[in-house]
Length: 281
Image (cartoon, rainbow, N blue to C red; front, side, top):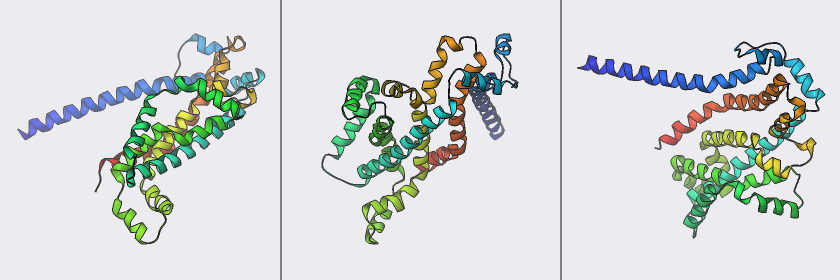
């Protein structure tokens, strides 16, 4: 009986792992082909698919430069926006969620329900009014129009609130007050270190979202020297790059590689966040 149970359990685990490996291959193969094609010439790409990198990455980059595509400047612009958005989103979302979770005040439920409503409203519905507002206060064609709204990110507050509810220890908060620590001091010295895994997880999502943010940037940014990488990649659709497939793939790869690097550096915090958020003593 026990032997049959172990055998069935082994088969189940085998098929689960097999299914996960198949999903991993389906996910990684397109990304790998993108990176490989960034190193191949247009002629090689037209000849068929290859999983082996070539040596044309420098020539592809020179083609992009000759066409006026400044990848380093686009990278700097994207990183400036993404890093600023990430810091502001994580800090203010955690601070807001901390206030909702720890304090009891009149209108708390109404405030949280309002945040839920904002989560369900897509940004595209309010972009016209948002652009007009940014124009009136002089922030059109300015990075601040993309950075400052991250202070009030409803989705990030919702995530932070759900996470803090699972890990907050009220006795530590009370102990901090007894020791004479200010309310902000409790948040900075006690709550943030405890919530570090969730903050890093939120930071990864915020960075990726800000890095890939094309819609808002396309509406608000008009100066070419302020273009982000996704906006520069959009220009590759023009007739100038019609037959430069290797250069196009290199431009696309430039937008993907930083996200992959950030994910691999901080991915362990996602696992830690899930583990700590799942168990509360």
